[in-house]
Length: 344
Image 1 (cartoon, one colour):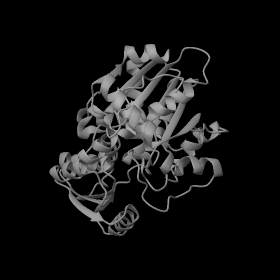
Image 2 (tube, rainbow, N blue to C red):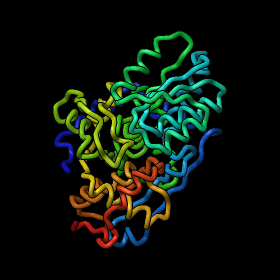
Image 3 (cartoon, one colour):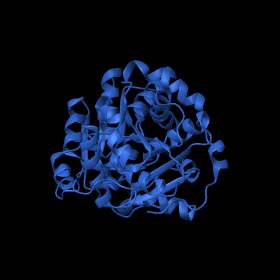
């Protein structure tokens, strides 16, 4: 688990998403989303010696932060007369549910292209919201199919992360959280395609420029950190087998990549640590946290080991959708016998 060696903070100011865009998104989506709570565990704070706060987007409508970006993009498209009557998306689950739910709210059709390893609970919810689910053998094939379908007239392609309106919408989670917490020393979020961390970076640096913004991704799906290290977007050859399925994208986007390069740190988390923190956060916070969300705590602990003063940390819990198979894998070994500590 290595932090980013060098940070190009100037890239942050070259983007096409500003705090004004995030604030506009917040106003636009407010009638359609929940203002989710921020939780703390006094026990965890005592064990680690720092104040850790958790933005519970697992309690958001559809069970994840993804609704923020999807509804923002669709509402803005409607404002500009570009929504049409049919939306398309490719997704491993949470974005699929968000697009399906938003499409139902706005009265348009939705088709979602997914790989066959899509979470069953996420797939079921997507279909429940009225979307058509098109299943492919792999995520790469699903992405290719949605790109072809998007060539038809009257459809709007809803990228899961690689769109400025998506990034602005995702940034509202951090904006809402920082209003609840006040100034923090650092903000942590998981990284799949990079939409959530990009929006969080814009928001945090605008409100509290000295705060660090740090990402985490699975060690077995580390395309983002390899992209940062090489300076060129790297793609995974095959769908990674990780508990953190929400971070199992094959590559980051060309729009999110500059934001990732401007982060203050980045950590790769192994599967044991992902399972460990999923168990402990569910136990301590008494809420349903999916592995992708819990993964960020692996990065928090590694970062705190480098700090010499008490820190106030915000962790964005991105979602809470877990199917039975994934839950069995998370709990196949008991990690609750080992108390959280900066020494592990």
